[in-house]
Length: 68
Image (cartoon, rainbow, N blue to C red; front, top):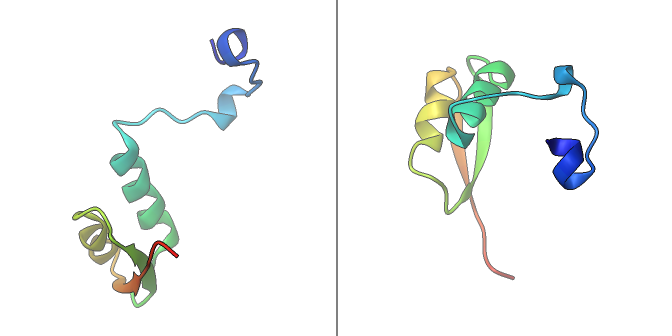
């Protein structure tokens, strides 16, 4: 389907199936963050992102962003 509809070529090892984007983000945070790490979260952010970082044992650090 990826190739037929969009002309994209991927191997099965390059494809991940998840319950949604937030589940994938949580999995990435759990893999990349260790206890004592700090994770930068740009604001505004989805309400669950800081808790994902805390679940990984890391500390969320918020980075204020602007539209400029």
